[in-house]
Length: 471
Image (tube, one colour):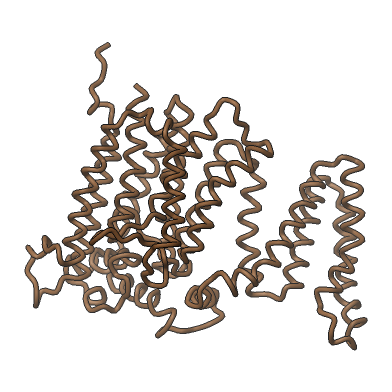
């Protein structure tokens, strides 16, 4: 059989979707700034404006894509650790000599060029995870495997948090989806979802009620695993009685918090459970007790994280999202105007360059975090669905590429790319329509910004290079 040429080995559907998304981004950035009374259509090439700069970023991104395809595929696995080390050094350098923009010290300024190392760190993390987990002596389910992969993910995310870029740090949770695909226990993924629910409930409810919910869920879990329903019934009877009568014992003691009576009630049962689990070597009970303790730690840490880690505007956005505060002219202004813009587009939209909400600065950060509302207003529901469909097809093709790899390094890296792009896409759209708090996440390939476009381009085209090497 005649061997395929390099161009025939490339996944052209992915490359085509990439080009279309980048062009959609350039056009909508232009549309969000364009003023027919002051500018002509050919001003799209004006490098003094964001739309002109985005064309430059797009052109250079195409050049970067060619470079990524030209490098030998073995380079990415051989130099994964040095690339990761350089990336971590750049994150530390930002903390020391970085420039602060919009309250975030995450930019390195090199003359007229501003670079955000946090955007490129996800590429290094993807490469190292793929290199680490593809080693012949690596076993993910061991304690060593979990610690190593956890450290690779958490180190850059913690450095990014120190830069006040909490949103970008959140994206690193995508890598845990990769660990799950590679054989990590589904219980850890379930606990991650439960931790998010606990975070929300710890804000909405009193601490003692959250603790009671944790204990109740764990008891139900053990009853389902062991099929000893009498334990669950007895647990609920004890807690119902405790909830009714024990607070009265402390009614005259103002210095005793309600959480104390809960801990007093729980302590003997927890002690007996631990002794029984280790003496009888009941693995399910050990996991339930470990989850119980970990959940208590999460619930206890929410207040500290909420009050000391998050910025004031981030706290307010979460409270507005949960319905605990209303501030349509303040912290909730962005989302409110974004939903107005998207809703005003209707089914078919107002037409290219005919948007009104997006023209007169009603929506802040129009070209970056909220670029999707320009699409919604000018292209309507159908146009928005086309963009979403393009992303969904892109995710499907990336997963298909990952699954057809013979090399484990390429497969794991492919899932890292799919997970990162999906989480960026999901968070950006969710915060644009008010389903998540605004945390400053760009829409891949579409939002304005050289660092994000270059980083996404490198991440995607490294995968295409690895895929071409499988032939």
